[in-house]
Each structure stands twice: as C-alpha cells, then as structure tokens.
Length: 139
Image 1: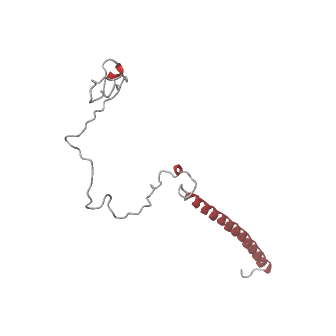
Image 2: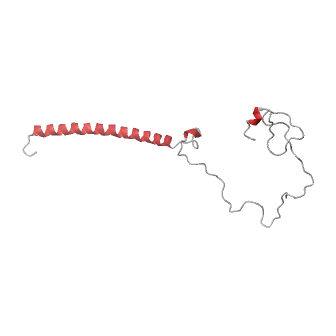
C-alpha cells in the first residue's frame, strides 16, 4: 500500500482485525462441533460393536452374519476310545440262543381291534373288515 494515507491504513487494519475476530469465532464454533461429533462417533462405534456376547441384547438381534460359537476346549492330541491293547467286550449274536421271546402286538394298527393268538408275527396286523385298516399306508 505505498502512497496510502494514514486513515486508509487504519481502516484496513480495523477491517482486518474484525475479520480475524470473525474467523476466530467461526474457528471456536468448528472446534466445538468437531469435539461433539467425535464424542458421538465414539458412542456410535461402541453401540455398533455390541452383540449378545458383550451386552444384554438377545441372540436373535445379532443378525445372520454372526460367527458360530467356538468351543473353549483345547485339543489334546489323543484319540478317542480305550487304551491300545485293551481287550474289548460286547454281546455277540449266537446261532442257537438259550431263549427266544416272540413279541406280538395286542391290537390292530388301524381299528385297534383285539388280535387273537393266531395273528401274523411279521408285518403290520390288518383286518379286511374295516376301511381304516385297508386304507393304512403301512400294509
């Protein structure tokens, strides 16, 4: 500003001081808004990280992308079962049993009619008289 008068320089300085005060006020407002948004961001991130494992939310609110639960048991490297070389025991089926028990149904499947001693042993007992037994899909 070469050749400017003292009044012009003072007016420019006054205008610039007003502008600086205005910018400082705007800056303070932006700093306050930024701090408020940072606090809100922290809260939203905390709530976004909640699931049924770290809050009181029910498991149904976790959504479909939830990982399946992992077992807390550690692998031991051992195979399941008894010790190697141990003699096993089981009930073997024999060709000539000591005793045979025949289990007969007490009633017919469809109509719940009483069965006599001459009823068939194998299959589902059906009577030809009633329609309930004839419609039975188990015949």
